[in-house]
Each structure stands twice: as C-alpha cells, then as structure tokens.
Image (cartoon, rainbow, N blue to C red):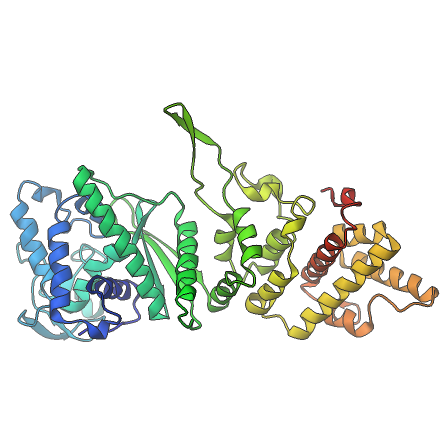
Length: 481
C-alpha cells in the first residue's frame, strides 16, 4: 500500500506509520494500519499538547487554527478530511500525486471546501508556500497535488520527529532501516510524552536538554550500538537530519549531513576494539557545566547542552585536518576565541597524553580521510623511528622543533640535520628519500598541500610512543603550551 519515495519528509512519515503499526516495511501495511494511526492523530492532534506544538509543522491548519477553539467540531471535520483521504472509498482525481504517483485525492482539504480539490499548501505540507501563490508550481496552478496516502504520511511526520530547540528534527537515510529506527525511537518518546502531558494537564511537549546537533549524533550512536548488540548487518549509508520550523513566526531549515565514510568511522569507533579510546574522547567533549539552582538545599548540576566532538563530526570530511589536530593531537585552533564552557579551551597535549591513540587515528585516516595505506604505514614507521631517536639521544630540541614548527622548511631542515648527525656517527638516517617523498612532498622541494597534517600525524605517533616508553614523564615541561 505504501513504499518509500526518497523524499525525506514523506519517508519519515511513512516510517512513523510502519513503527506505529509494529511492521517491518511499508509494503506490509494494510488499510487498517493506516486507519489506526489516523484515528490516533484525529484524537490527539486536536487537543494539547500536540494542538499547541503542531503550529511548528502545520500553521493555520484545522488542527491549530485559534478560531476553532470555540468550534471544536470544525477541528474534527478538518481531521476527518485530511486524515481520511487515503481510504479506498475516498474520491480521487486523475491527476497523479507528486510524491507517490498515485491519484491525488479529490477532497478539498479545508473545512469550508473552498480549496482546489487535491491541492495542498503550507498548512498541509511543511515548507510549502501559502494559498494562492503560484510560484514554483507548474502551469501556474497553486498548490501541490497529493495522494491520500502521502498526505497521511506527512501528517504523521511530527510523531516521527524529535522536538528540539522549539523545532522538529527529522532524520532520513538512504538505508531505510536507519530511517525506521529513528522514527520508531522518536515515536515511542513522543507517545510517552503525550500521555504524561495529558495526564498532568501540560500544554507543552518536553525537549531534550541537548542542542539538536548533539542530540542527533548522540541518538545515532545509541541506535548503532543497539543494532550492533542485536548483530544486525550494517550497510554503507549516509544520514541527514532536517531541523526545521514551518511556524508563521519564522520558517527555518538547517540540514546536517553525515556522509557514508563518517558513519562507517562512527560504527567502527564505537565497536569493542576502539570503544574505550572513543568514549574517552566523547567524555572530554561535553560542555563544561556549573552547579545549577539549589533545590531542597542540594545543588543540581545543569545538564550539558552540547558535545563538541559530536558537533565537529558534522563538519567532516571537509574539516578532517582540524578534527585530527583538535581531538587526536589535543591542540584546538584559536583557543582564545572559544567560549568559557567549551571544553576545547582546556585541551592540551600535556594534560591529555592518555587520550592520544594511534589505533583510533589510524581508523580515522582509513575511513574518513581515505588515506593510502602505504602512506599511513610510512607515517607510523617514521613516528616510531623519531620517537626512538628522541628517547635514545634525549634530543629535546629536535622534538620541540617538530612540535612548534609553523613552516615546512623548519620541519624539513630538522629532519635533515638529525639524519646528517646520525650519518656522521655511521648510523642510518632517520628517514629515507622514498619515505620523505611519500609523507611530505609531491616532488623535490615541492611540499604537499597537507604537509602540516602529515607532521601532526607523525607527532601523534611519536607522542604516543614516548608516553608509553616513559620519556615524556620526565620531560613534561617540553609540552607546555
């Protein structure tokens, strides 16, 4: 009766119907399943807390129209028309609906019956234009023709979204299983919140304390860990979150995208092999909070609103070099520009030595940066060689130069001088020509555009090794910022 369309709002709505019915796929849905969720919406969309909140999704609709507060029968008329257009005995046009290709409903989707049959506007479909506006519609016909099934899915959309920051958060993926799992999680939370609010007489839906971006990534990780515990196979996929408001007080849309390679990294990082190292980075990523108000003489800590690690994942892979420097080398850019509650302001190589992990970085380079395996191996080998050199020769100056260099020629000259010194003693150079080219240069004296990234990667391996070997414990002063 239904199938996914590729449109995020429609698909999240369909996934919500599937979750409500307890089915696995849209193809398993029956007309009775659609009728069941339509009946649930008809009862709950016309009363608080949803009646108040739905202004974010369907402003000036029959569900939210303030003029109907004293005419509740009109809300019911509207609900019956909009939520019942899917029924097999409902009239249909010969015009196909834009989302499913099925015939558009022939019902006029307002209480008075003045709207063109089968045409939807902003009060029916989030982020459309209002009544009578012909812009962006073919043939100058205002409104979007829609089938009853797609219309029901769009009305179900808010139930499969999270409320965050006064807006709706819808999550969609090219892997329908991910879309379903998010819709199922949010539907369960919303139904519980609706029941509690109605029992307590509350008019507002509760919100998570976290910002939408942090809440999105945190929920994704929870769902992925849940999938892994049930040993479900994971398919390569990207995930996109739509944080939007259709409110008359301000239409807005923010889109947050996690590409396939980043989700693949998250899945591997949260698996058993890297979980401890990953969780340590996550713990140090939460907002710095202070004691809140006293209640019954006890200070209550304010829950953190954001996690910088989670939010910086949404800037990958474009900001991979900065991500590596901040979270793997523990040296964030422009610390002075950070807020007082931003944990990155307290990151430092010296205090976070135990968080520096080459295996987790190696995973990041392979999954996100898509770095050549041979180059990763060259970097790892060089890091081991340089760490052994610094430890055995106690060459503080060499280590300090690599740690603080801002110019390519400083890094190159330090490596050349150290190698020449070893050659004079009859020892092998620190780095071979092939290694140097593979890591730092495109050609002779032509540095790679990412030479500073390569230097950071070598440093991370060096620091990890020097920390494990104990050299940094007796030379901690060299790490002073």
